[in-house]
Length: 555
Image (cartoon, rainbow, N blue to C red; front, side, top):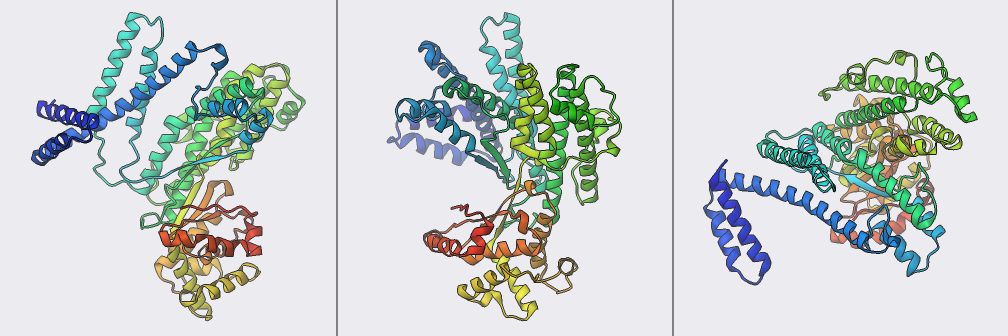
């Protein structure tokens, strides 16, 4: 397309390789600096785009090559070391075998630790860091084609076709604009985060857990419980308002509704496939029989799995409809596709309740799973049914719980406005001991500090930023507990920063479903002083009871 750009790219690449081969030689780096100084802006953009695409392609090839070497080494070794997961020292399988063979830990102990652990991966977003969904799908297709080209016995025509498809995808990537010309809204960033889940994690996580289950059977002699979720996900996209004035309470509400909509549509798609698959008309467990009897207005009389799944489908359509209505009532809502257009009309959805809690979907799916296992269809149960149950356990009905992050001084200003309105002084001007005394007293008091509707209507004439801070808690109080994760306090300095968030949750009626309050100690001084602040918190009985004596800290 542009020979000058290609020549510049190859020159930079060669100089970079020379510098990597001999870091002590300053000549390649000096030549690179001179070349970069003389390059035009247009050519610089072309070179950067070429390097970006090349590095992504190299990453895909490198991952594939590493897995090829792992498989090759396993096949060269004795059969004892062949397993579903790769034998790498820092992998789960490698750790299992080291614990068993070198540390002499019992299989039961390893298994109990494995099923009780939770690793939470948090999705964050910066306007330049969320890849476009079209590019995510293209790079995924490249990985699949690389795997296809490795297949033994591939017909020459199939190999040529795969190679041509690979070239076509790379050409399409080159023609795509990777740079965002318009700064994305928070809603679009959230949609990008959902795209990562839909395009990659939705299939990858159940696939990994199938392998982990098989590895547990091989190495530990035990089957991984189908509803165990050692991996969890959370997101800051739509909840991180620290330094982002565009992340308002209304936007957070919109993102939460959008995530629930995407989860409902994806589970509905899964259940459509499951409905087609489970056309079984005999041998049901008593629990499945009892569940099927409770479902009215179904054409599936003999095929009772379908009777249950059909009811769940109608409830999910109702969930989709409710989420769409919610989004349409909010300003600047993303475009939505109706349930009928996406999946075909399912009659009777108006007469059922929506599925709003994870257990409403998990419980009947587990009845289906157990019925299949106990009636001789375990191979069927270990297929799509297991995958859907694991998705429910990991992603839930909200796709990812949303964390909220706010800077500590915002809470200080909000409480200062409240104490001034109450005529008891300036919270901002109190010392730490006075703040702690008042916070502890109010946390144990049954008397609210204000009426929520008075704050909504701003009858107290609070600063708009104070109202916005308080309305975040109102939005949080209206959500299902599983929709929310941690409340992260950036620039946390003292124990009162934590208790202030606990008090604001209490004022908005969240006592029985508190978000985890997580202080983020960012500066060296704050980090050095954090043990003392935590000791103060741990010495507060009401706080320790509220958090069940478990505290999360970010540094």
